[in-house]
Length: 272
Image 1 (tube, rainbow, N blue to C red):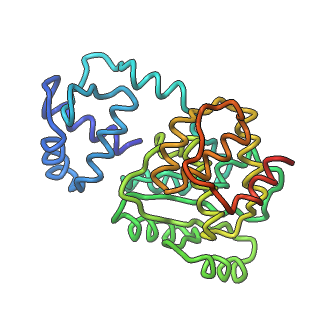
Image 2: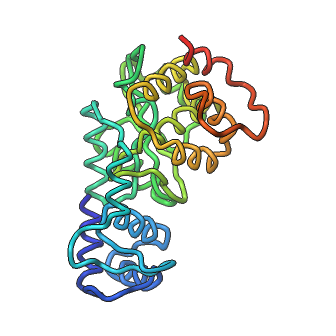
């Protein structure tokens, strides 16, 4: 992304190949780009993951002379980003790239290759870094995209009833965007977000179809189960996702700590 490249360029100009701390990086990028501390931490995380930075210790980084990092390469090669098949979603991503907002597209509209049934309209989940919601909302609306900031299920349903045949962009703010791969969620992150948004009645999407989607992904892709469960933990649904993993991979050496309930519809979809 442009904002990542610009940030790396500024850090190179300031520190060249000398070590620098996260605090020093924040001072530099705040002065030049007015980025918040959280935004800078996410920038450092992404630059480390794509091999642009080496980590020398806790909160200490260095720009390598050669763009290579074995740990980052391993992560990049073993995690798969979602595939974007929607021109409207691609347009939204380009708009957010241009304004430098930290974002991640996720949810069921990014998993269409694994769907059984296709909706007439897409509910596009766009997660942005804390504090960027209003800016992202205005940017999309200015380009005639239908967008809502953290809507309730009732608000979403009303919008769907009112705006026939219109795709909707749902913007939500997060303190960090774990599983973000250059603006796209990893498959593991998209699974968790789809499950959470559906089962917590955040979006009007079928729990049974969610189960079908998860089953298709498990059958077709090689997932990082540790990554999946770590993300689930951060959303408070680790036991539920552990039960799903055991349903799909009975031999996987993990058990839910508690008796996860309320999964009947999702499990039904998995078993179909």
